[in-house]
Structures are given as structure tokens and as C-alpha cells.
Amino acid sequence: MGGCGGMSNLNTSLRKRRRSNDPMQEFDRLPRPLRLWLMEAALPWSPRSVRRLWAGALALYGGCEERALAHLSRIEAQRLAKDAYTFDADGTT
Image (cartoon, rainbow, N blue to C red; front, top):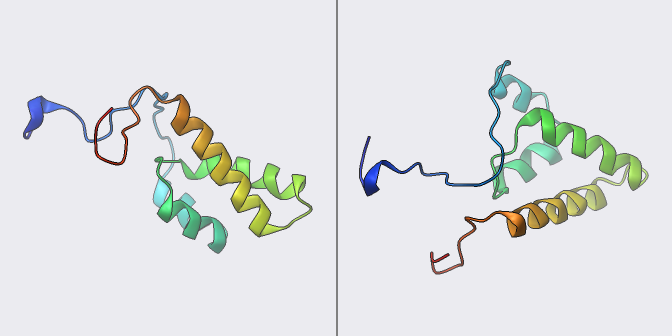
């Protein structure tokens, strides 16, 4: 299991779901700007869920990718704020 009392490296109160498809193939089919955003994202987004949010954000902002990406960043920040296990910059809760 490893050190630290067998704790996962991703402790979160957010829901977890099983994958039925190959997430790497789904990731590869995402638009380039969205793939780049995902590589820097703090949360482990599934390609399917982020594609759905991306489509909604593009519709909301008339196809503007920059504004859609900013929208995704705001959503991520809101979800992180809700997460009971979010750590401060110094690693404390």
C-alpha cells in the first residue's frame, strides 16, 4: 500500500464514478484548448464531464474559447471551495 497509513493520494469528499470507456481515448478527442486546460486543472475531471461543461460554456459565451475556459476555471474553484479536504498552500487543512 505504501506509507502514510494507506491513505489515497486523492482524498476528497467529491463523488467518484466508475469509468466505462477508455478515458485516454476520450481525452485525446477533446479540443486542444480543453486538453491544455485539463492538464493544468486541480481536480481529476473526466473527459466526459468536462466536455459537457465545455459545450455549455461555449454556448453561453457565443463560442469564445477564452471565456469558456475562464468559466470552467470558475466552476473548478467553486467545487474546490466546497471540498471538505481542500488543503491550503502550506499543506494544512
